[in-house]
Image (tube, rainbow, N blue to C red; front, side, top):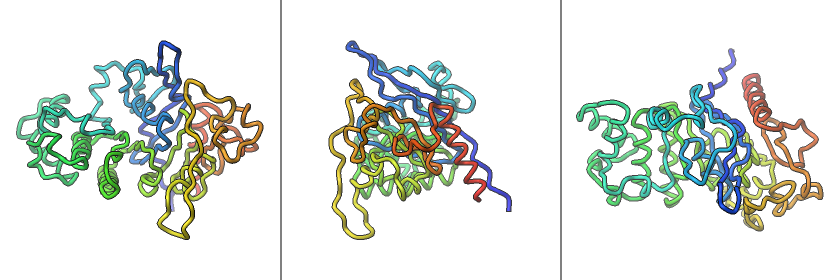
Length: 349
């Protein structure tokens, strides 16, 4: 039996750093982050509030506004560096090739335009479709997300929170893009609506084959839907690996703490544990490991030695507990570790 092919990379992030340039000094919210996303892959990005998840997403989508600024690195999509592209160049690929679903649909949607009018604006931005084509495609994508096309005449305030989020996903699907980036699209929904929306997203992804970057602070939300999981802390990658591997055997003490904070519906009842303290002020980064003031497994050297990314059985972990293993430092080495993991998966298959 022949080995299955390794998915072609649709997005590559290399050494990306983002700073907020303020009068009192610069604050680095994203620090040397590297990863890749394959065609049709679902990548979940998790972490507490203030860990740099949304800033990373906005940098990838080139949606940062002052005082935020990309200070290093690149974002490669279809052979183009999104970081260096002009607004005119970006407008040619937004919605058509790369779509973004924002955290708050009520704020992302124009409150004084109907859903249909906003869909029409997106379609006209990439061509000159007829009115009949606009109505047909708009109705089609609404049906895809389970909304009656009659709501094309509705305004955002006339829809429920779940329907507004589905309308945003429908808008993202107008051109069947290669990559859909989602910034906590379920954060304002109840748990039933969250599950329903996640199932809808996964079904659309499997049907149309686009890649997804899904940013959330809720690890349990992506446990059954993402292919790989990236855990961020204080602007850095703490852990990155296959979702099932991260959940079954979390390596980083921070990842372990996040998982222990969520109840399980299986097995014996155990008391939930929280992570003491809070993420550091990014303007005053601790020496050594950024997690050491909160870490239950802290060692003396954690307070001085800065950990790199270590390859632990195909999962990248930024923790000195694994410093006896081969070190992967910087963007190029992180990508090398990811490629080695993919090659091993193919060989095992």
